[in-house]
Image (cartoon, rainbow, N blue to C red):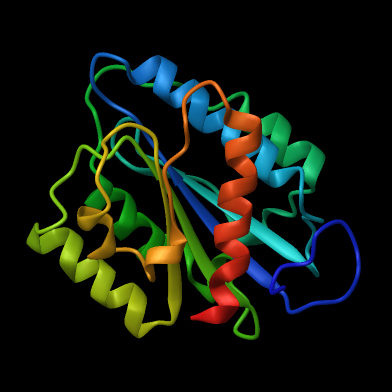
Length: 197
């Protein structure tokens, strides 16, 4: 297992989360995303020397809310997730969130560790064009930087779309509504699959 659950010694990991929702059901979708993230975070020892976390929110124009060097623990990261403003006003774009991750999150100035495994976990309702030049360029940049991309899609069905942008078919999770605690474990399993890529 690449990531260490609870305790023990494994390779350090820097996990960046991208989260955002838009559309008619945006508030309820976003609440599900937060619940999934809280359950996911509960499975890891989040600390400066083990798993570091960051978070980009694209409910509006993309903003990096947490950086790897912010020193979050499991408790304060989980608490912080409850305070993220929900969707409203101008919606953001996934490509904007990817740009924010590349420019501000996966940087040594903001705590990225060169010796750590870089994982990008994207929670999205799926309402974006996977063939857009902006998204394809960002995916290419992540792959050239050895960032592994894991997707959790809360709304839009179909797997073909996700194969183009995830780092592997086994790194796509489609959470089933009303089972967010269990679904967080699927996301956890997908992230742990990173070592098999």
